[in-house]
Length: 141
Image (cartoon, rainbow, N blue to C red; front, side, top):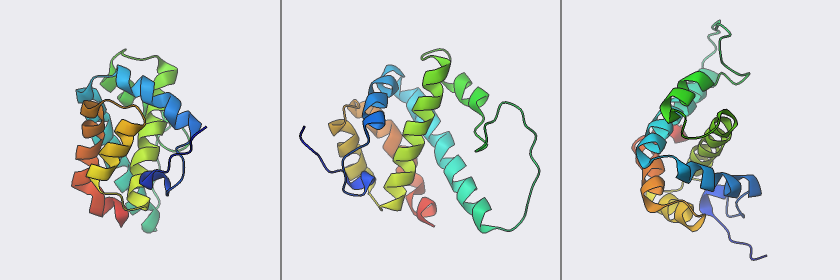
């Protein structure tokens, strides 16, 4: 097996589970991927800012998991394009991509190229990179 190194993975090979999810993500329309990424960027930013603050809040336990992911909201965004289990996997893959790219300070052009190398169509890679690029500096804080 040839090992490729990706900047958004810390100059390491991409995890196998992420490679597997690229096909699932490509089943969604690029518009839906962009909407998902926009929501995930906001979620990552909110989580980062809340971990910095010392204010504690109480949340109701609806359709959210331990990390506070509202899967019902994301299921509405994909609207039956993938199975319920795939929704969670897609969210994990996109969130990992966004968080890792921010952690390793990868610019959106390089991220797009790397996502295409992993098998994501160009339109989908652009759909991930646009929301990420707009909030890149804020995600790094």
